[in-house]
Length: 248
Image (cartoon, rainbow, N blue to C red; front, side):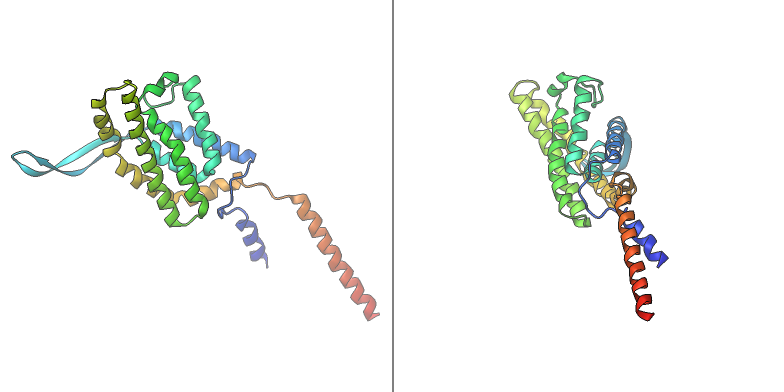
């Protein structure tokens, strides 16, 4: 009986796919996610691995490929899972406002002139990813949906970045000849890593969400519970008195 009671209390704080509530804890988690996104923006990981390349006159050669990777996109996918669609959008809108008007927290700078930067298209893709990945995750918390959210969320970001480069070229902000070198560096070289790391991070995301859910979940109404408990005890007491009267 005691074990069952503690099990019921413990189950109240396990995330089961409920919508993210508006609580003080949720706002605190939003602030933490905001800081996490800034940290990811300025974090670079060196990745090296074997790579096959066709070299003229030499054929297929094996060499070591090295690149600097920024884990901003996988972290954004994690934030979408933790906060849900609407609070992720609010947090990211605040991130954009800070980058535009307060502090240069974007990659390679900030300010309103950053709209002319080709990387801003990838930031705009974050908004699309919030709706696509957030909608998929809203359906249920299954492993399949988490993996689909990772794949389609990452692809939407890179597609939006590519389209934005074309728009900048049409408005003569950048040269058309720069589109494919940019896409090769930002998308072709990194999209596979973004998908893989996003999948991995969403595999462990439920455990992270369960820890944070203890802060985000609305606190149970203890007064209502106490009132129900007293009412229950009163009914039991009345039944016992009734049985005693019947026995007498």
